[in-house]
Length: 51
Image 1: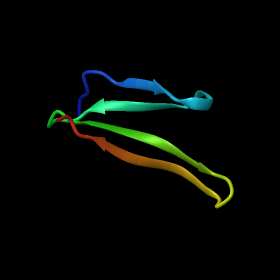
Image 2: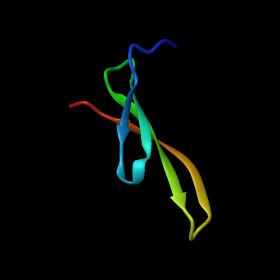
Image 3: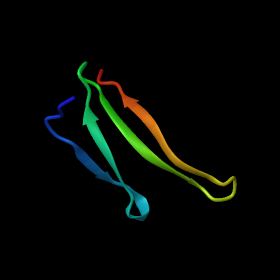
Image 4: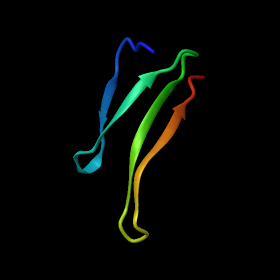
Protein backbone atom coordinates (compact mmCIF):
# COMPACT_ATOMS: atom_id res chain seq x y z
CA UNK A 1 0.00 0.00 0.00
CA UNK A 2 1.36 3.41 -0.94
CA UNK A 3 0.42 6.63 0.85
CA UNK A 4 0.86 10.04 -0.68
CA UNK A 5 1.32 11.70 2.69
CA UNK A 6 1.07 11.12 6.42
CA UNK A 7 0.08 13.90 8.80
CA UNK A 8 1.37 13.83 12.37
CA UNK A 9 -1.07 15.60 14.67
CA UNK A 10 0.24 16.90 17.97
CA UNK A 11 -1.94 16.39 21.05
CA UNK A 12 -1.69 17.33 24.73
CA UNK A 13 1.46 16.16 26.57
CA UNK A 14 3.51 16.00 23.37
CA UNK A 15 2.05 12.79 21.96
CA UNK A 16 1.78 12.60 18.18
CA UNK A 17 -0.41 10.33 16.12
CA UNK A 18 -0.48 9.62 12.39
CA UNK A 19 -3.43 10.59 10.20
CA UNK A 20 -3.49 8.81 6.84
CA UNK A 21 -5.80 9.16 3.83
CA UNK A 22 -7.83 6.04 3.04
CA UNK A 23 -8.71 4.89 -0.47
CA UNK A 24 -12.39 5.90 -0.08
CA UNK A 25 -11.56 9.52 0.86
CA UNK A 26 -11.92 9.12 4.62
CA UNK A 27 -9.00 9.34 7.02
CA UNK A 28 -7.61 6.83 9.50
CA UNK A 29 -5.59 7.44 12.64
CA UNK A 30 -4.10 5.50 15.52
CA UNK A 31 -4.01 7.09 18.96
CA UNK A 32 -2.27 5.91 22.13
CA UNK A 33 -4.08 4.40 25.11
CA UNK A 34 -2.38 5.23 28.42
CA UNK A 35 -4.54 4.25 31.37
CA UNK A 36 -2.24 3.57 34.32
CA UNK A 37 -5.08 2.98 36.78
CA UNK A 38 -6.46 0.02 34.78
CA UNK A 39 -3.03 -0.96 33.38
CA UNK A 40 -4.19 -0.47 29.77
CA UNK A 41 -1.58 0.61 27.24
CA UNK A 42 -1.42 0.38 23.47
CA UNK A 43 -3.18 1.95 20.50
CA UNK A 44 -6.69 2.31 19.15
CA UNK A 45 -7.75 2.78 15.50
CA UNK A 46 -10.11 5.60 14.47
CA UNK A 47 -11.83 6.17 11.13
CA UNK A 48 -12.70 9.80 10.35
CA UNK A 49 -15.57 10.03 7.87
CA UNK A 50 -15.60 12.94 5.44
CA UNK A 51 -19.15 14.24 4.98
